[in-house]
Image (tube, rainbow, N blue to C red):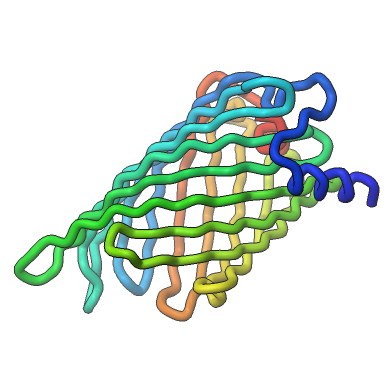
Length: 231
């Protein structure tokens, strides 16, 4: 309980330095591709992430993404590109808290015209480590340039069956209260811990979807649990 109390204190404070370590072992890079099949159509996406240490227990992350969605029935085709910047505070044996800003541009093909929309989102993410379990809480607020607003609250639980195999459950709230998901992530040792494979299923009041993603990690050849908690 003492560890949980310290973690909650971190969340309530702006920036706190615990100990003399950084929030990340070293700068690292990853790139991934993913595909998704859903009731609304099929999508394909690419993502890239850079994470680097700052001072004491803090780190910074930069992410970029590109995606294409081919809609079916009454759903439209659309493309999206995004960029995000996050700052996080982490204690290796305790947990992490991150504040992130993300900007995205979406182009949708609708009958006889093209619709363009820009969105800004701000999110706060906290995760608590206890043995092989992770408990997480995610809160985000999104606003589009046409004035639409969307708020999301998500809680999650994950477990490492081995150092390289993780299963996660998540449950959405607020405007996405019926958005729930399960995923499995595996990092085979035969690839020197440089490849990660994920399968997932999500369900909501609108669509159900299945996804598969493959991620390549540059340079860092560590176990999945160490990657998630120290990199």
